[in-house]
Length: 221
Image (cartoon, rainbow, N blue to C red; front, side, top):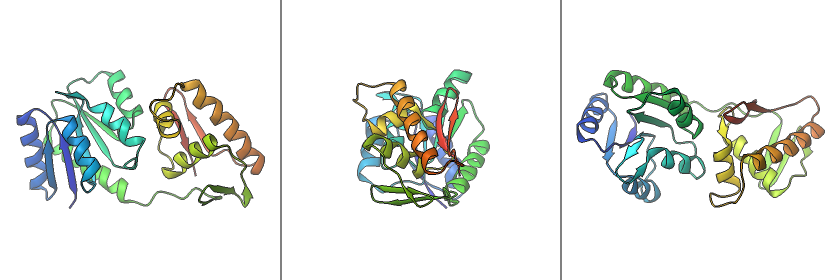
């Protein structure tokens, strides 16, 4: 069916989730520490889906989610589990890259249904971005070679890698500038603005970068 990595420090919850998923044919590997998950994702074969708790003994699950979205496992589907159901917590989880958010206590049957739905979406081929052609560091839009700076190219490639996904400013900042960069949201907004201008110059009828107020940016086919 699919391999799932479960990061949950509460043994009772971990056992319940693992049992429900294994009963449906999923292969489940359960871990209880953030450091264990980081090492597992760095050295082992990538799972098909990650389920992680927000509160862990050695850190925050959302930090791992943010790291994944800025690295080679950027497309790994992630479901966040949390004891908190406040709207701001859900928004933060989704903004940092989670694909789904489930508040505790939850029904194991509902979690299984969400896992199935998320895997179906992940396995479907993403829609192509019409007009774009990427050849190494050279990108063309409708056949016109784009004259992009290194940072503009990084932003565009990040958006092209996951069309229709909303990329938060923080995720874009980490992916293009690096997590230790001394920059902020305004830096991302400024470079998105110049990137948009170059895209319009190459193809005046197109405006593929969409702004999601308070969330970030996406590239729409």
